[in-house]
Picture 1: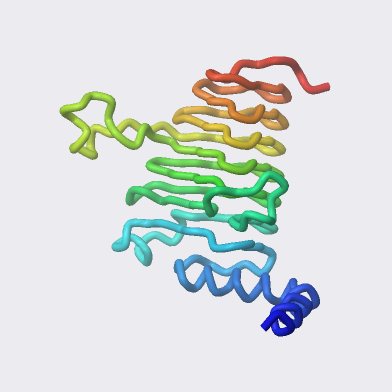
Picture 2: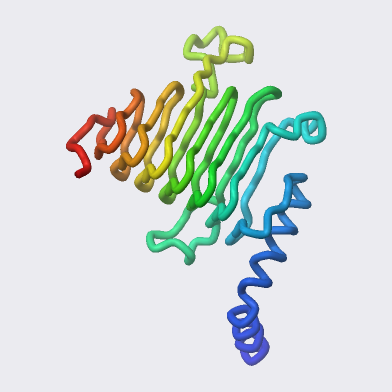
Length: 206
């Protein structure tokens, strides 16, 4: 048995690229999303959409080239405690992801729009959600029409540190860095480092 495991590991290393393409194709077929051979799904990601919406909206999920989703614990330097989750939570909502985007064990949920630019890195355990998920007033929580949602825009070359939360209505300017564990409740300008709860600008990036 141990010998068989060693042989399989050696084969996996030798044919790593082939395996990666195979599993990416498998998950694309499973979740009914377009296949792109430049994508890398490392571990098992989840793509969620309302069931009746799968075939009726082809542009509700747009992903550029060289997208990497890491859902496997040992493939991230600090580990991941959940798979990558891409959640189109309502009909009419949209997630747009640019080129050269890497995500580790994080959730992206769209009730209206989440747009991510090119060359964006999203660290392990982040949550990006354009709604509160539930109305704030207790008596309204069973009424989905009362749910508040505002688009999230993450511009090019942004780095979001591990365990950060990006809340509704936020824009993060190009080239900015969000410190680990931050809660971003208001928009962040271009070319700065921001951190904390709530996140505030610490300094400019020269």
